[in-house]
Length: 144
Image (cartoon, rainbow, N blue to C red; front, side, top):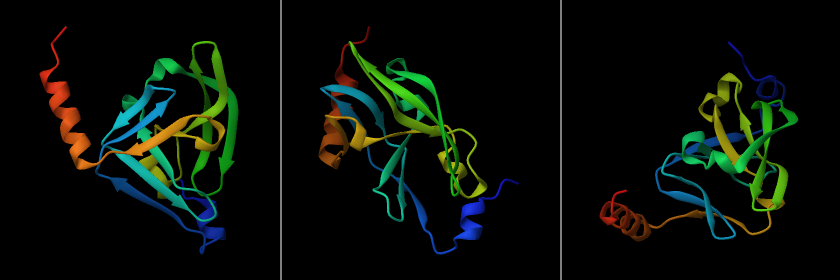
């Protein structure tokens, strides 16, 4: 058991998780960094919504783990990553809870993007028509 001390000490503070059942993409200067239909939206008091993507749906080659860590009394200890593209490196703009508190185990090994620190980053929820178009495009693409 690894209960969150934050929820015990501040029972009125809300950290709401919601599994989104729609395709979402993260784009940065025309590059897709993440593409998933298994995203968790976290809506925490006094913070903007954050979107946590499974590691397997994020382009790991564009990330490098840094030495930075932080502690959230509600979710646990976070590890940070730098984002690389060409000659540009943005340190500590992606984070992950690798061993979250019990109340937030669904966030384990997911990655979130610090939108405010990444100029040009967009997180998009795709409409059903875009999802269908993407599925058709992938299914008709020539195989390698």
